[in-house]
Each structure stands twice: as C-alpha cells, then as structure tokens.
Length: 196
View (cartoon, one colour):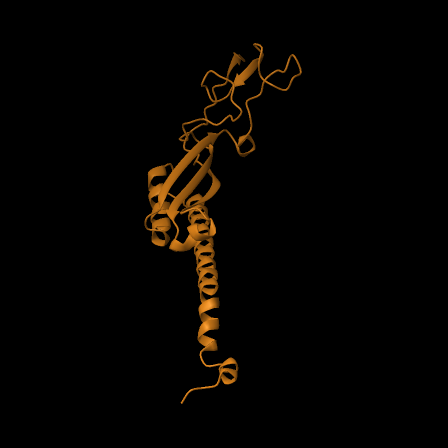
C-alpha cells in the first residue's frame, strides 16, 4: 500500500542512522586526535623519565664515565614506547653547574656588548675562538657538569594527523645535567685570545 505524501513527511524511520552518519566523522577524528595527543604525552613522559634515570645512573659504578651504556639504556626505554624512534644524544661539558649555557668572558672595551674588534676573551673550551656557549666537546673530565640532551623523533601513532594539519612526525626532547665522578683532579686550561 502506498503512503500519502503527508505521512512521509512525518516518518522518522532511519533518522538515527542519518544523524550518526553526520556526526561519526567528527567523533572519530576527535577521538583519534585525543589518542594521538595522549600517546605523545606518554612518549614525552617516558623520555623525561629515561633521562632522569640516566642522571641517577651516571653516579653509580656500571655507568660512571660510560656514556655509551647510558645512551643504550635511554634508547631502550624510548624504543619500548616508540619502536621506530630515531634517538639523538648530545653532551656539552662545563667546569661547574653555573657555567651551563654561559658565554665565555671577554673584556668589552668598546661597550657594545659584543666580543669583537680584537677584544680579549678567556678561551675556556680551548677552541681558539670566542663562543656564546663555553661548553667543551669532551665530557670525560673529572667532576665535569655535563648537559645531557636527548631527542626522539617518531611517526605519529594515528594516520589522520595530516587531515587536521599536524606534522607526520613528532619530536620529544629532554635534558638534564650529569656530574662526572671525581676520579682525578679537574683540568682547567684557560687561555686568553682576541675577538675577531
């Protein structure tokens, strides 16, 4: 039997399915975004925790002055969460904690705030030029304060990131300052140079 046009206008069969079809893409995209953010937060927490554990481990015998063993342990922790992560390590050595991130001292004879015009400077890291960061490349000196930086780059867990304008990869970083064990005297060979 045929329905009249007036009864068709009041018919609500299938409305729920149509409403769900309209809402589902937004709901799925929102859930995927939340899952992705949660995963990245967890990965960031794992990297921070692994670096904090490396700081503690650097003071005990198996890891003291053994940077490769520390790196391996941190990398294993990161790969437990993000197996495809590319992990990069960086170390910068300083004489003490107060030197971290500080520039080499210089005499600012022309009061312009820049080391230039043949002004004398203390070459703390021994590379022959004035540096905005007095870090040394070698981190094996006794009692050195070592800035230990770790970054991990991995692909996003969920493939829909590009639909909402996010990058396909995520990079998380963490850093801490380690202190080498005092097995011998700390060397400090500071020379004086001139700025160019």
